[in-house]
Length: 457
Image 1 (tube, helix red, strand yellow):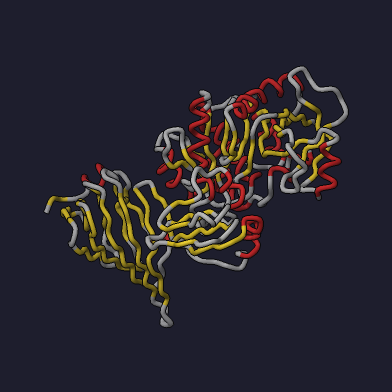
Image 2 (cartoon, one colour):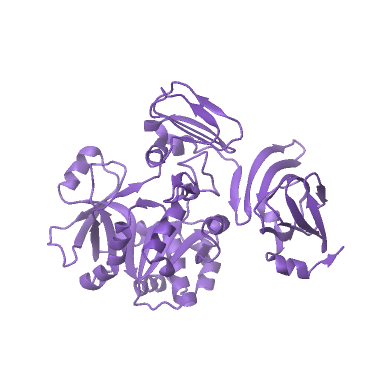
């Protein structure tokens, strides 16, 4: 069986720590067994490794999240890249063509799809593995996984089984679905053995390939990539699951929690205080998460969440925190903090002047031994002021060594790269007519390839 973790979506529900490039699964606010900060994606991948399932697992994600995944999980994790952000049906369709045409997976193989950020115990993955057996025993086209509810929740969708007896491995036939019912209806559904829909399902690879063929879509990964923008942006639930009649569900009775809002996330944090600042003892039930370099002091505030990052500051009552996505609907800004494969950066200042000129100031950190790709920009110039550490830089095929206090000027059109000889920090000031990611014209990524193109000055 192959497992595919879906990693997508924008970061609205855990703003301001999450943004369009750093979604909730990348926030290092949990604690690993070693007592170190751990993100949701790191936790799930660790659990897959511990259960021996990582070797048959893949991550499906958009281009904007690739470097974040590599930064947190390493370069050996197999990633299936979407050309652009779409909904779950296009993402899963692209994944199917990748497994079939690139990896060579048989159409008879079972493929399980699951979210990248479930907060679960190890037994969860034992039930995921059981879906392969469930598919064979039941003869179903789709096998879902449903969580046995602890209470009548209005936050989750429900899977309602038929009244047929359970199969040999405990699976149930699916009657229909109900999306986020009111409490009274949820209680009635639970009395009918309804299960929470945790977004995990399995199918035979050939089943989905047949659907793609019926839609006239190619089964080759590269060909579907080229047509990706033409696919309807629709969820797999709407496009496939709700149209399929032959579905079963495998109940899961262990611990499962959706950490999709601030109030649920803070319940699982090992500390109510992260970052600079103070919380007085009478601030009962209050959490402070501060990524800024300035302290935040909380006095006598109860049941609040206070979160601060370069993207903004949030102060909310815990019970009201799920409203953040609705409140931010009309709010747009560039991500002010990003993790990359080489380190991370924070935006210190951004100004757009009336005449159209833009100035963007970043504080950039590169880990020892890592490098930024050899690239150039057509629409901006840059000035780097080295704050700490030592690095090698290449400017138009010529190499120089720099250290704290040095200033590097990079005019428009100048090919440039930097390798951190030690951990290095520098201030980057961009000035130009259009400061966008699309103006990063990458020449090569590997430092050995960069060295081949330059002459020692």
